[in-house]
Amino acid sequence: MAIEVKNEPHITVGIMDRRNYVEGRVNGIFSVDGIGPKTNRLTNGFSANAAPGDIVLCDAAGRVVGRSPHLRIGSGGRTTFDLFRVTIGSRFHWERSENQTFRGNLILRARQDGTMAVINEVPLEDYLESVISSEMNASAPGEMLKSHAILSRSWLLAALRRKKEPQKTPGEAVHIAGKEGEVVRWYGREEHDLFDVCADDHCQRYHGVTRITSPGVRHAVRDTRGIVLTWGDEICDARYSKACGGLTEEFETAWDDARRPYLTSVTDAPVPYPPVTTEEEAARWCLSAPGAYCNTKDTALLEKILPAFDRETETFFRWTVDYAREELEEILCEKSGFDFGRLQAIEPLARGPSGRISRLRIAGSKMSVIVGKELEIRRWLSRSHLYSSAFVVQVAGAAGLNPERFIFRGAGWGHGVGLCQIGAAVMASRGVSAEQIVGHYFPGTTLKRLY
Image (cartoon, rainbow, N blue to C red; front, side, top):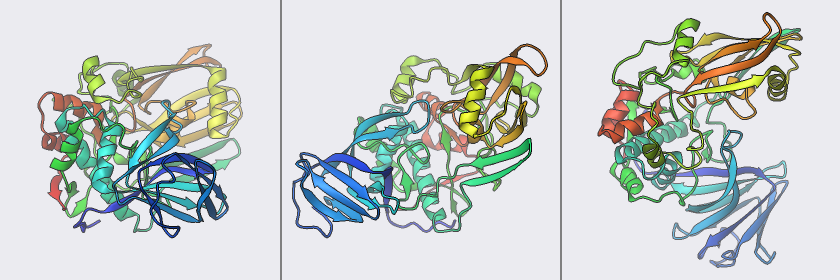
């Protein structure tokens, strides 16, 4: 994707989607496109009801303000609006609902199935202030915030370009025949039809302006304005995850097989570690605690760099999940849709260099299935998600085909591709510059200012 951006774009962010009903409040004077003059009738609150191909917008008293398949509530960027009961962390272990405040314009778009998309239209640099404050704590070290601004801007501009090209993501290959089968799925970030990106972890966290609590955030975005990460004449598809576990992962382990030369495995430490290539090496890696930037137990630092709900995850570098066989059978049936019968074995078949599994065989008395890739494995083996797919399986109980418990001993939090957020924050706290941080996690890349 050749570099072509010359001016700051405005983007559309899907805050909520496929909703029948939404409530909120506009904090100031606004106008509704095609409805009438500017007014403050929504300052006490509003509601919107969706019907097939139509949306009815009402004020707090229930009086209809506008009715259209496409409502755009605009203020010229001078006011904010609130949305109530927004879900964050959807289907992850930190999922919850909260009220959020946004800058820019509010767009409501009807779907033909009787639901609507709730969208925020905002300048890209304003969007970034929210993203890096939502992904990390606004009090994180300044060089970490600058690194994140560069990566988030790069990923977004690369994603916008990809939306103009034929897409093959999300990907899926499912082959089930008799008692054997294979399910391979990966989840791309480009399939949104009514907006550019979503507001949750599927794309980038975007939780509005309420978390922008530090001048450091604005300085980080301002100081890196228009700067992106490049590989040759392309903007990098820059990825990141919370904690790599000591080694970052290759792009192909988590998504399709199209190689990204700048998304290779690097060591999250001053000294290199060899890649994980065998099950014996995976066991040594996952059952040890090697020195790494993201291997930190400095609670004061973690409080500075992680949002409060992320700090609830305390054992992110090395972790253990222990299931009774019957419980795991129930989870597998619910999440995969397959009845494996009595669970007999869980066997890794392919791993990336960080130890993350990309193909996993699950065998039961009724059927066996190979599942991939990284995120689908994590979904099948947890009521929400396992922290990562870098794990080894230990079996407890009777020998042979009658295990009583399955114990997963794992490393890291997230897909592990690209920048390690906690590792990068630790580097920044030690005086490493944003340019050095980005260069460490994305070797061979260069920085370029587009506007």
